[in-house]
Length: 460
Ligand code: ARG
Image (spheres, rainbow, N blue to C red):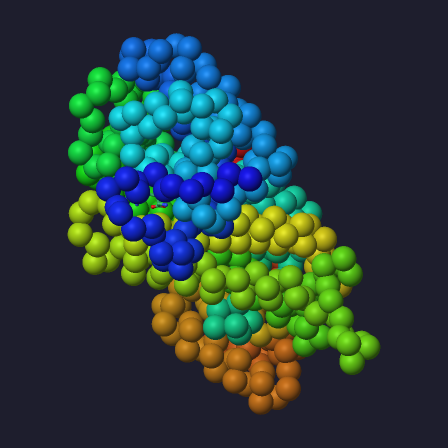
C-alpha cells in the first residue's frame, strides 16, 4: 500500500539507492514488530511539540488521529508494511502523510530515528520485562502448589547425580522457587534502568528546538529522562542486560528440563508427565518422550547465541549511533519470544506432572543415602566428625560387601565399628527422621519446607 518512492534522507543524493542495497538494509520485516511502541512514542512526541508551541494544536490533533488510524490499519492487516519503506518508522510516517497530508511532515521536528528507535526499544523492553515477570510469578505459584502437595513426600537429593540424602520433595520444588525469584528480581532491577526516556536526544547531540523532554517522558510513563544525549542513542547495554537475564532464566529452565527428562525414564521413573505434553515415536510404539522439556533445553542454546550475538555487535562500535545497531533487534525479539514461550509451556507441562510416590517411598526406605545419619549420630556421641565419617565409611563398605542394608546390620555388628552405638541408631536410620532431624534454617526438614512455603505465600 504505502510503497514510497523517496526515502526519508534522499534529497542530497542524485542517484537512487541501489535496490539490492535497500533490500539489504531494510529492517521492516524485523522492526515491524515495534509498530505499537513507535506510534505510542510518536503520539507523545507530537503532544509535547504542541504543548511547547513547536507545532499547532490542530496539527498535533491531526497527527495523533492519523497515527491512531495507522495503528488500526497495521493491527487489522489493512496496511501491510513493504520492505521498500526501509524501516517501520518510515512505513508509519509515509502512511500518515497519505492520510493527513502536510501536517505529517511536522512530526519529526526535534527528533531523529536514532532517539525514536531507542525509545521504541525501551518501551519494548519494559513491556517484555513485565510480560516475563508475570510468567515467572505464575511459575512460582505452580511451584508453591507442587511444594505444598509433596511437602511430606520423601525423595533422594542428589549431588554428582549420585543419591546423597533423603529430602522432602517440597524442598526440591522450593529450590526452583528461589531461583525463579531471583530471575524476577533481575528483571525488576533492569526495569528501573530501562524505564528512562531517550526521546529528545535527537540524532545524538540534542535539538535547538525547545523540547520538553520531561513531558514526553511523562507521557510515555518513563520515570526519568536521559542525562547524556550521546549515551541515550548509542548504548545498547539494556538489550544486553535483558538477554543476559533471559539467559539465566533459560539456564534454570534447561536444568529443570534435564531433571524432568531424567526422572521420566524407566531407569528413574520418579515422575510422570501427562500425555498432553508427551510425544511418541513413529516407529517404536511404546515410546513416550519428554519432547517439551527437550525443546526448552535446546532453545537455551538460541538465547545464549543471541547474547553472544549482541555482545559482538557492540564491542567495536565507535560512539555514537552506527547502523550495526539495527542488528540488535533479531536477537532481542527472538530472546523475548523464546523465553516467554518456554516459561509458559514449561509451567503448563510441570503442572501436569506427578511424582511416583510409591516408588520413591520404596527406594528411599532403607538406602545407603542414610549414611550421613550414622556419622551425625556418632558426632552427637562426642566422636569428632572426621572419625565419625571414617567409621561410617567402613560401615558402608561392610554393608556393600555383605549385601546388607544399613538397618539389617545388627547392633553387635555396629559395635564392632564403635562402642558408641546403641539401639538408638535404628531410630535415625529412617528417612523421615533423617529429614526431620535437620535443624539448620533453610534445611530440607518438613518444618523448614512448610516455613518456606508460608513465607513465600505471605510475600506475594
Ligand atoms: N532502523 C534503524 C535502527 O534500528 C533506525 C535508526 C536509523 N538511523 C540511521 N541513522 N540510519 O537502528
